[in-house]
Image (cartoon, rainbow, N blue to C red):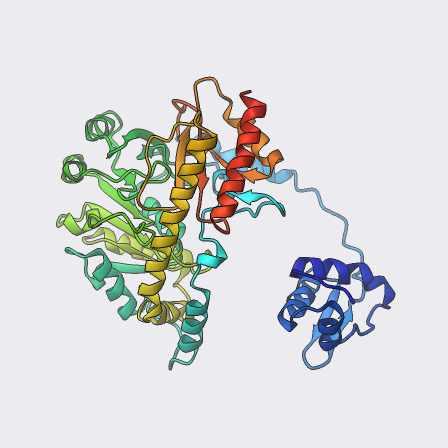
Length: 478
């Protein structure tokens, strides 16, 4: 008998044995495979599904799994070189050439190779995700009358009301649009608020995915520096005057990547400066539900203190649940709401109703507050474990700010240290880290690293990851 400990290992073993069977011949039953490899029926099912996705196996409900008949040879590859001309020929007419560079986003989306510790992840580790609660919510949602029908274009009224209550202030359900994840909401907001070629003010450093959205839309990101208290109002005012921009994108709470919280005395100043410039503030409130246990009371969203419709607010449930739980909201009031609504409908029609119904089931269940309390404690413990390990083993990396929310730390490298060399050496040592360069829309003031403590299995993996990073540091810096 064999023993296989994972879906991947079982799939590898079955793949190696496929030559024993003729095309179309039936493979051993699931029960036989369970007994032979001493794994669960779920592991067998997932391994066969993996082979089916590769085109090696065909599964037939009630009949079993069969070796797939080889596919006919693929047609000769055509010549697509003409597309290079077609995609760039009209670029000369653009004030800002449009480019789509997803590399900064893929850093936190791509799964690392087996054995590599994931300090570059952008989502909760599966052990922190509310998998049971989400599964139960989805099951209950599927039984709701009309759950598979077409939802209202703006979103289910009860879900819009829930998001509006979470924002507070002048925001009402009528001013909320349910969207498919924060990235989609930011894309809609920037398309609605700025024409191609326009400048858009961004925090520096800032989230690479937002920079990618702006550049893909032909916008020109203009950096406004951030310090420990958030964006600097005097420089924001200068940037509005110098550029004539009509949009400023910011993350006032646990900013990505610095972790800064916009200081109380700056909140009203930012809104006043934007209002004076006749500009919108896009508030990306992306990790409000990833507060740490020791954070204390949180400031309300900027939108809660905005009666004049300056703020277009984006909030999402994805970071606090799962990468696949892509439900978020856009909140605004005034004429801009109709433009946001029209762009969203054109782009995506609506968020699937079963997912909206499942969201209502999840956030209305007793499991939801329990989950938020659990991740608040877990993230604090992980943050403290990573901070302690870095201070002990890598004192040469400056840690200017320890956040009380979010899922990462932002480290500054010493002058002269090569960010790219350290990132590459870290990967060779078995730990994936995020370089700082993609977070800057202009030349960075120094090298940086962003280290996530949410995507790993626990404190032990954090300690081991820092040890591996120390090995890389020794190779690069000496």
